[in-house]
Length: 60
Ligand SMILES: [Zn+2]
Image (cartoon, rainbow, N blue to C red; front, side, top):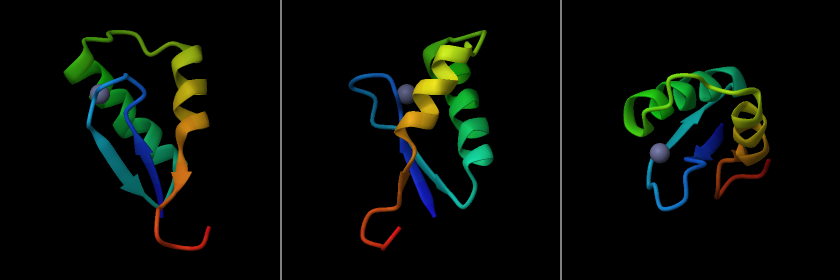
């Protein structure tokens, strides 16, 4: 499992999934719904990817 905490400072949202693609999809949806980002820019995707981590408490 991988996990991602929202890239927006101060936001407590996070998600976990097996695949990076699904995490990116969920993060894009969250950014649209919660942060009002109508367009997910390439730079945002790069930031999201850079922040995806192995789930805590388990070996990577
Ligand atoms: Zn957020």
